[in-house]
Amino acid sequence: QVLLEESGGGSVQAGGSLRLSCTASQNILDSDCMGWFRQAPGGEREGVARIYSNFNFKYYSGPVKGRFTISRDNAKNTVYLQMNSLKPDDAAMYYCAASRDARCGGSWNTHFFNYWGQGTQVTVSS
Image (cartoon, rainbow, N blue to C red; front, side, top):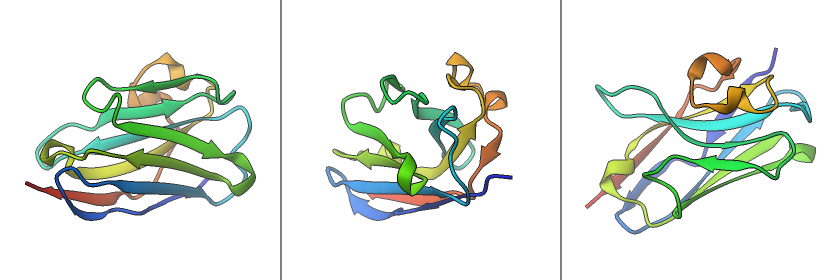
């Protein structure tokens, strides 16, 4: 079983940056697709970014496109989410997820993700 642990969350002012990390307890298989999701209080879990196993395909949700960047280092079993130009609307609990499907099912549907971390909190003040 793959265990995922997120880190890097915190409190920043609007316009600031944070870099989230997600480390897997065992090798992230080259065939795994990785994703970041977020969930604000009272809201549903929504997809933020996902990176396919071949590194070449990255997808972002509309609200974060152009501001967030997902990357992965399989040698370190780690996936990153660089978040720039943060807005108060970005405040949420951020979760890392791994999918045994190489394309994460081609969607943000959480059912395609097999493993989840416990989350790291991001707070953005205006």
